[in-house]
Image 1: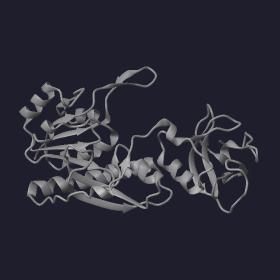
Image 2: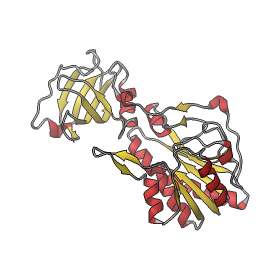
Image 3: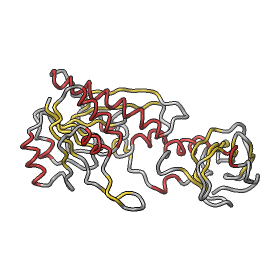
Image 4: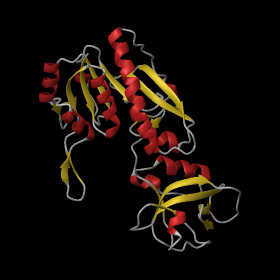
Length: 309
């Protein structure tokens, strides 16, 4: 099948590679323009662009997908199908209607739940017990198109967003491969989404990771997992801003003020919460690297009774 692929970040790369290995004709790859990155602000290629360059594919990088010259080039390419994974721009009707078989999107949630920009993070933050991958035919709404295929899997209470992201990369490629073959064979279903069951997964914000210890230990644990590796969970302390990388639900109860350090040891820092206690296992102190609490306390002191806010 003749395919135009549209994607930008790392999560889209395995799907591009899978389409190539499946023998499809990737007539072009569309990705976001190069952006300044790092302290030197040098222009950096997106992961999808780097993959496309390795395979010597045509690369298109429109500032806006509505540009007339970009639309003209798509018409010249005349794709059978456009595949979209985390491209980063809204597609207009002119693009959606252009391919013979339409546009297919790979979305990393069980639609209609978690439509939007950050479904991986919000599924964990909200303590979901399951998630999955969905392919759908795109329409002009935000992740509202007809579902083609879903693959569901369970989440444990330790997985973080970074780990789930890596799982989704591979699962998404596999579901996409199945989906494109079904479209090619004429066996792809169209299942209308139930809008009444929809939820939204908004873009992540740097301030989202600020921990409120008045909340339950479970909700804070989920927040920590859901914000790894970005934007990260953090709190203020007498020692400065602490970034918290890994936690567990503590044992027992306490009537101490939420945020109070109850114990410190090789297992971690146990902190009182609005409900239950949280065991902080991995931290990053100001101007320090990430490390387990057991390593940090070998040369530093964290006092019982101090309050984290």
